Image (cartoon, rainbow, N blue to C red; front, side):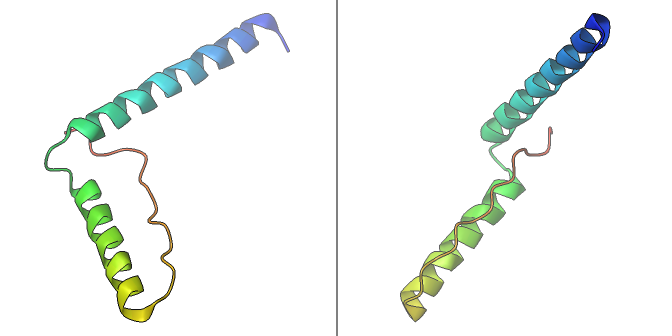
Length: 69
């Protein structure tokens, strides 16, 4: 691979990693995050379902980022 192309790909990857980290930070700081509230509700419903039926709970899926607002 050409060195310039390799450097460009590396820089693009670094920008994506930084953007992903920023979105995750914003999601943690968002007090009214609808995505997190939905996941908490889903986890609580799964726990309630396991208590009522005696089944094992499936882990709730996690959204990697929230709205940047």
